[in-house]
Amino acid sequence: MVLRQAFFHNGRFASLQEAIEFKVKREREPSRWYAGEKYDDLPAQFRANVKPVTSVLSDAEIQDVIVFLATLTDGWK
Image (tube, rainbow, N blue to C red; front, side, top):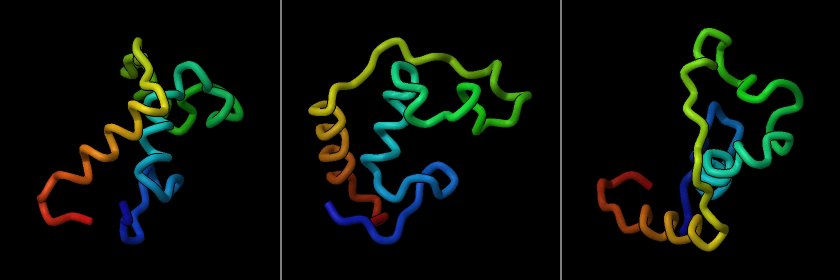
């Protein structure tokens, strides 16, 4: 799947795979993305609103999500 110059999560991730991995793995691997406090990318007033993910996708499931998203035909690439 080829995406045009798309950026996700405030420009931090350049691919859909990176963005999905962040969303589904940040609970069990927070040090991979956060140098300090977990969710320090959010304004402090919103951190209490975060609902931790209780299930995590495997790498194979992440690929399945990406393949599925590529089938959507809303015209965005």
